[in-house]
Image 1 (cartoon, rainbow, N blue to C red):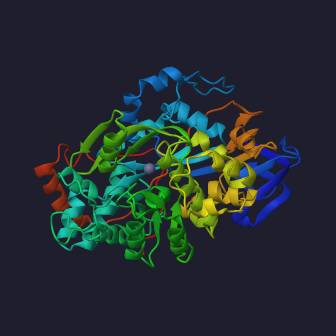
Image 2 (cartoon, rainbow, N blue to C red):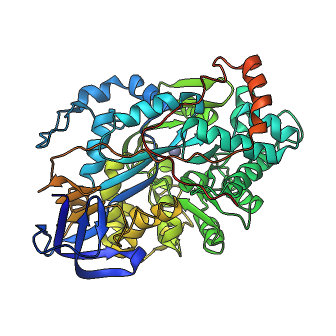
Image 3 (cartoon, protein in one colour):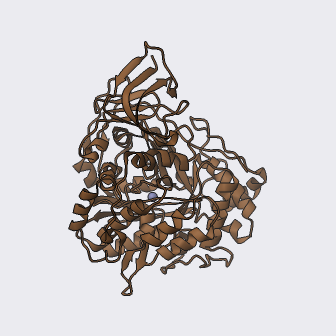
Length: 548
Ligand SMILES: [Zn+2]
């Protein structure tokens, strides 16, 4: 009953070196297997393109800030009601709302409808972790997890101030397990804390945050070492200081140099790749950044591509949202999350005729097109910050079709594009292999998900089948079939089943001695008791962590 043979499709499985070969895929009980009896159910994929299910390494779908954004934008709910899908199985079907921040059920349905089967929320404040798990429980189909914000955490900063880096590592291990998270997230290290204290200037890598010993550099080093020392499946996931600011590429490069030789992931790099022109305006800084990344195999990144149209910016980087709110005049929310982090939300519209939007669009494409190793520069729009995940098919067309890309480039505001690689002309066109790398195989590898992002025996049976189309954005927007964990969820382009996804989380071991001072800290300063803080039993077993 649980067996399925996908017959005659053309496979793109770069993790196993398979490029455009016609092969069958055999599925038994949720896993890919070598072979099946002749009696197994068959699905005809002749002439179609078969890839592993998509893996989103950086999105925002289940956090306190996502919920604030949903509440801030009721007009989106009015504009995009999402009816309950017509499911054939016994699964519960729920209506919802769409827009840039879909409701939970709609988020699961739409990701699956796009051929994506694994998604990570990139920024959860640990005190809000219970809410995030509740939201993910209500996000069907996709396997999901989240990254835990630590770069402005009061207790961590105290340990850094005391020079207790080994204790900081043990605390990070405890916090990940307590929140049921998957990876360490760093957002504007120290900068959010400084902003909360009233500082409004740019933060340098060596700006003291209170104590002279606590600097963005020290926080970065501490958390990168913690992720590597704990043997976490994913590196520390870093949103650098000075997001969006002219000249910030210098900060980004300095941050990379600060952790040189150590595994680290730098996220939504498009927002951190601006040079400053002599008149102080932004211009592209993509070239020096990508040259550094090309030469440093320990560094990985995702792009955070901007797509023209409606977006919602939401981030733990309250300082950035303050600047955006001041410059755009759009309404906003700002919340300081007691001892842990910040949070801000501002709706935003990227316009072709706006000089800054056009520059951002160009810088993101440059990062893709100049990257020597697509395994280490993977696809994201930082949904919904640079645009919705529903814009991925359009982004794929921009990468694969130079003629189309150049026609779009000709339409955008040229004011800030002088000297950029795109303005000089970039001929590269991504192949289907490279698309498979940046949308599934690469993110899975960077996340340490050995059962995902490929179609070899033993892999999770997450498979997407696309009908070829002249227009690749159409092909990628509406897969013909999607299999999730062995269940056929999309049939003939229609969502038919909505099984529960798995929770992806880690529970690293830690030195129990870390708990005594922590309990004291909670008693003195926290609004939640130490005992009630951890989320408790999660429904899926944690992924094993091999401490070094
Ligand atoms: Zn993000």
